[in-house]
Every structure is written in C-alpha cells, then in structure tokens.
Image (tube, rainbow, N blue to C red; front, side):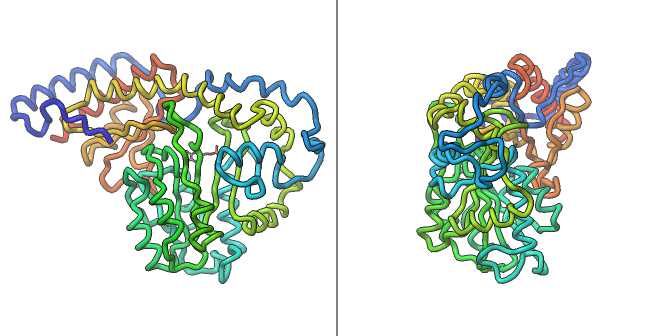
Length: 427
Ligand code: PLP
C-alpha cells in the first residue's frame, strides 16, 4: 500500500490553507461536472483489444478429434479434455488427475461446490452442511464482492479478517477456525487478490493448510482467478495449496478454482477446479447428476489455440502489454493529484485486475456519489465487504482494464478531484 507522504498533509494545514484547498477543490469539481463525462471503472472486464488477442478461437477447432482420439462432438468426459487439463495442471502446479476442465465460469464451479456441500456434505462431513444450525465462512477483506454475495444468498454468515501484505491475517483465521465449529471454510484469492493485489506467501499458505479447525470438514476455497495475470515480467508463483494441505495431513481441505475468463474470452473461456483425487471423484459424482459432459469443443478450441503451457504464458505477455500502461497511468494520476496530502493510500499491484484505493475514513461513499454526479461510475463504496458494508467507509476498487488509456487518464483525474473534494468537505 502506497502512503505517498511527500507533500504537506491536509490535516497539518492551517484553517486558512484548508479553506483555500476546499475552494480550489470545489472549483475543480465544478469544471469536472461541466465536462459531461461518461466513464465506467466498475467491473474488472478485459478491454475489446484484449479480447481481440483471442479472435482466432472463433475459427477453431479445425477438427473434432482430440490428440488422444476423443470425438469432442459427443457426450462424455465429464472431467474435461485431458490435453487441456495437462496444460492448466502444469500452469496451476497440479497433477492432471486432480484437475477438471468445466464450463465457462469458475464462479459457477464455486457455487456448485457450495451447493453440494450444503445438500450432501463433503467426504469428511459428519452431515450435510445444510443440516447445521449455522454455517460461517472466513472472509478476508477487502475481498471479491461476488464471493460474499454467493455466501449471503445461501444464508452463510461471514466472519471478516483483514488482508495483510502476506495474504489474509493468518493468526486471525487460525483463531476463528479453531474456536468455532460452525466455521466451515474460507475464501482465499492467492495470487494478485481482488481488489488488493497481494499474493499469499508460502508461509501463510502452509499455516492455512496446517491450522487446527474445530470443523472436521473445513474447506479453503482457493480462487486463483489471477494466477497468470502478471503486470510485470516477474511471474509470481502461487503457493501449492493442495500439496501443503496433503503434507499437513488435511488432503481434502482445499478446492482450487481458475479460469481463462481473463485469458481468452470472459464469456466463453474454460473454468478449472482442482482438489484431492477423492474430492475430485466426489465433485464429479454430484456434477454427473446434471451433465453428461462439458463443452469439449471449446476445450479443443482452447487446446489448439494455446498448444502448450508456454503458449498460455506468451499469450498473457500480450495482455500485459495492453493493460500494464493503464495501471501505470492510474498510479501516476493518484500520485500526482493525491500524493502527500494524507487523504488517500493505494495499492501498487504487480498483477491482477485492480487498484485498491483507501480514502479518508467516512468519505468513500461521498467520493463515489460525487463521481457518479460527474459521470464516472465507480464500484459502490463497500462492495469489497460482506453485505456491501465497509465499516470504515474507506475502500474504493478501481478497475482500469476496460476503458482505453486516454479514458483511464480522464477518469482517474475525475476520481482524484472527487477524493480531494470529499476530503476537503470532511476536514
Ligand atoms: N474470482 C475472482 C477473484 C474474480 O475477480 C472473478 C472475476 O472478476 C471471478 C472469480 C470470476 O471468474 P469466472 O469468470 O471464471 O466465473
């Protein structure tokens, strides 16, 4: 998190200086509104230019038989095409036998997993989760809004723990999990977290894998959505949670999720689930009640397109070339307009899709409101918290990938203007 303390902080200024700052902020905001902008920084979506990188997929596959002889047009192969599972197994650091290639959405696989747990229980559950009086999940915050809304939709209670530079506050996780048998699981976005960008360290991952839990069937939902989404040439490696769980004596603790939503097409990629062999069998057993096989034509299409794990890595470098300048621009504008004022801090991510901006406590909703009135759509304040409730009203998630570079500049200038005005009003 950048603190950017290199100019006179607003809080240290005299009442006269503060009044002058506020007058200037109001003027800047009036000018901004007069421009009649319309920008959207809400969702972490790939830009059209990124989707164009995968345009060839629309002309694939060239045939209908996989290298191992599977006719992809037909039913069957619930676990997905072997050769594609090999590639993504290699990229995720998991044996092919432990990876399933599914439909287009990993979020759907997470939801299905949760439904199976609620209705049937896991292989190590004393009873279906749904028969418990209360179920709780540990939720690192800020986090991914859809993780939280998914839990809320099933009436699962959320216990928040703070994110640190090393991942979730692991002492807090261990304490909550050890004390309360209704705590059945936790979310983790191990690489370039949404929205804060941190990567879970080896040490934190090992502790999560080994910690004692009051629930015998505690599950880590290890959502590695940004495993390959590096913004620099450093390819941060995710901790191998399945191996760590296995060597800690909890082989069935983790489910790993990933997808090509931000690699190929967000609406027509391939999602993956990995776990222990026993848990893969459990998952396929339940999934078989609703499917005779995934879209293997799409699997073959992706296989032909990438060819190998290195093909995926080379493809991700092209994404980086498009989006890294947008992130650099967000950081440049934030530093230029807000640096040193003591009214905002932000992350400087080296991967993923977001910049997490913390403004003065109690002003995030005002910033979002001001931005909306000036034509800039920001994710609602609080959306990175369970039930949309940021207790400090502090956090705003910035998603810069979708707009083009010039629009990122203008939109961030607008955001900075709103942060300055909200802070001036507040102080
Ligand atoms: N997980 C995280 C952490 C995300 O940020 C997103 C999308 O923003 C998803 C999952 C969605 O994944 P999918 O498109 O595979 O459903």
